[in-house]
Length: 202
Image (cartoon, rainbow, N blue to C red; front, side, top):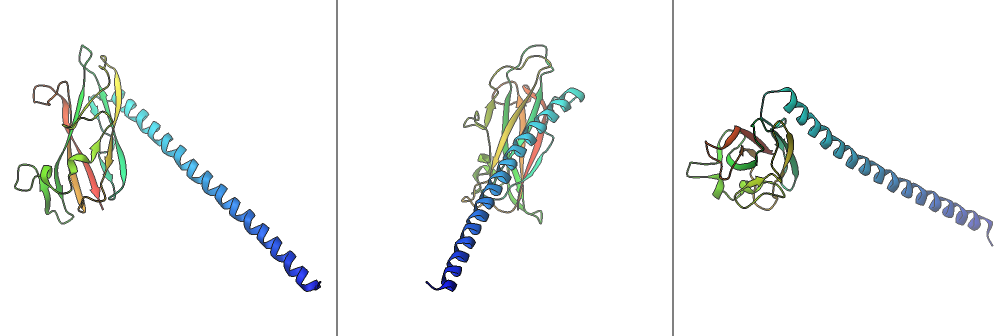
């Protein structure tokens, strides 16, 4: 057999083995990187939750939303953290209500606005469905799973999902967030003040 041919075959086998080893190493590194990212995301969520708890302890506010603005691309998602402290004498059943109030383009022109001829409730983007929770009902109310005792603090999550197929226009979408002690929310049963949440679609 030709000595040169044997050397080429050996070189090919060595290169093939090295290539496979590098490929396996790349796969392993990729897995570790993504796995670490998942752990970090969980850690950040836990850290945010603890920060909200601390803010409820140190301040006088009954309702805390530390990050009120999120940038979410169509097809993307994010989460708002909401802290509630019961300052009432008795245990309270709380309800969280959220609705899309208005949306504006970068040039300040209106995409939709409640109380006008182009309300957000009938806009093609259907932004009223963007904020959700596992416990949210058809009227956009989240009933906390149990009553909250006096001075007790709880943290709830509202997920933001901007649909990719519903023509969400670029702009800033403004949501009203209310916490109430009964459903529906009224001036008589609102707890704390109405908060504004902002979802920016780039």
